[in-house]
Image (cartoon, rainbow, N blue to C red; front, side):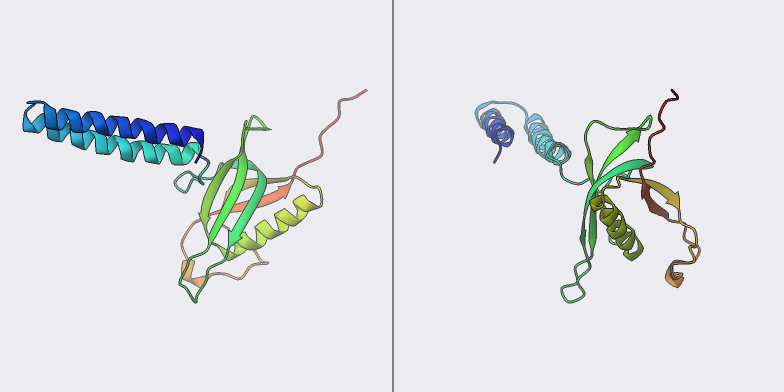
Length: 172
């Protein structure tokens, strides 16, 4: 347990002690006591959700940036025997003004076989020394991929990976 988490737990214990004291030892109306208790429980839930993003948990609700620099990826394939659905984790930095943001962020995506194939190729290119950029594009039919007939008429965002272009040098 990190120091920040320990301090947060101690703060919650102190807040709970104050709440119990206020509920038991005072002659406040019952409505005020109920509102204080509900507000405290709401504070616990809100802070728990907030701490998930602070501690580096992957963002499932946040959308992957339109253009990003790929740092790493972990792919968990679906397991039919246990019924587990697959998950793809991507660590990427948003590109702001053609420069990466300060720090990368983790994103959680549902498993997709074409994305799995593209990520494997992008990671292989990264191991060969080619930095990989990614961009979100609208799904279009690609001749090298079979058409998924279960998704006809559905427009989905897809992720396209490509090598970081060579920098242009200034003229002499």
